[in-house]
Image (cartoon, rainbow, N blue to C red; front, side):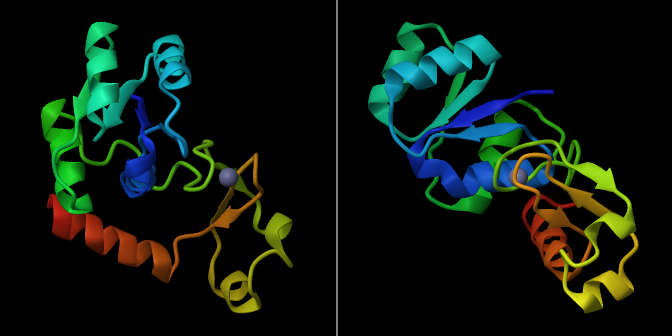
Length: 154
Ligand SMILES: [Zn+2]
């Protein structure tokens, strides 16, 4: 599956690529050398809106996409269309904060870590091995699913 690295101007795009299931590193600071090294080492496609980075990437013959739109919805479409990608390769399988693959956890393990009403009404929980954040298919996720459908269709 294609993996990405985004520049500091594309934090929202990085987060939503993770929602769809794309392993995406987000650089908070523009550090051209480190970004290029990391992309090369990990085989990541760089997504950028910065002309200097685009030029460096082209010179280094590294796979990249110069994102044109300022709007998240169009940016997502640009990425998916540019590489003919599936729109949802593994929705809700990555931590939105740290990009780690979530693992399923037994309900008993999250007792006390989620609100009581969530614990009482949900049976399936995932957690991030790095930051320990717990995820479940609740209303927040439903809203994200609705957005994805509106932006990218079924
Ligand atoms: Zn995490």
